[in-house]
Length: 255
Image 1 (cartoon, rainbow, N blue to C red):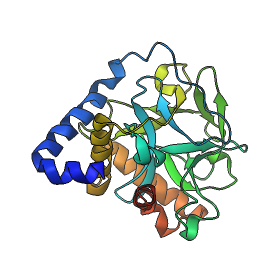
Image 2 (cartoon, one colour; image 1 turned 135 degrees about the horizontal axis):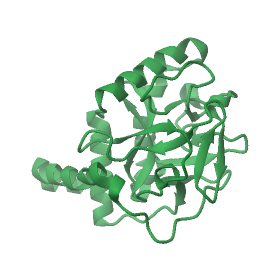
Image 3 (cartoon, rainbow, N blue to C red; image 1 turned 90 degrees about the horizontal axis):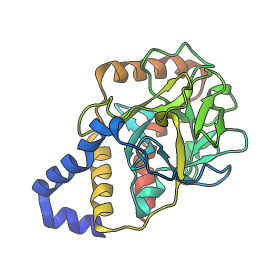
Image 4 (tube, rainbow, N blue to C red; image 1 turned 90 degrees about the vertical axis):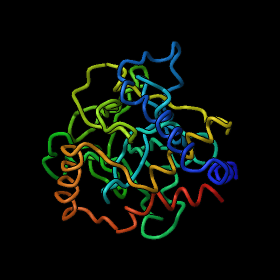
């Protein structure tokens, strides 16, 4: 309701300002110091937003950019919208999109999980992490070091990395896989779901707006993402619903 009022009352001008304010920070986020006390680690079986320790305002987020289901970094949304950013670290080591089984359809049984694709294909350089139907392969197994906050993939041996500042301005920022170095860009912490205040409502609106308009990534990253998806497609079933799932989750969260 708050989002609808903001949209109807403020119009395009305020939206443009909001987008500029809320998305200009990631371009410089690599230089932002983490908060003095890191949020709690990621517990097995508990649905939580997962923020990068390099800047805990930004969360791992499932999107479909150019029809490629992937994980990117976006402002941590509060309230109902924040539930679409929640992940579950399963007992088998997967990072599952918490709402992915709730929308029904082809993914109701499997859900959707963070996937390096490294057990299925040679991963192109600069490729972000995909989100694909949950499966048993090592490409979806992530060992978690709670102290360092790292998630290391069993297939690639590389750590989930937030690449704040490496994407286009005023857009979602990419993720990647890199050798574990212990730096904050590879550290992740669970966040408590915050309440919805006015600033939070604007950020949630910006996230929803970006998702509706489509996300633009730098060309090398976008091309690598498309290439990786085509390489793994013959080896694992990927229903058409994967590209619609983020929108379906947002709709479900608003009910």
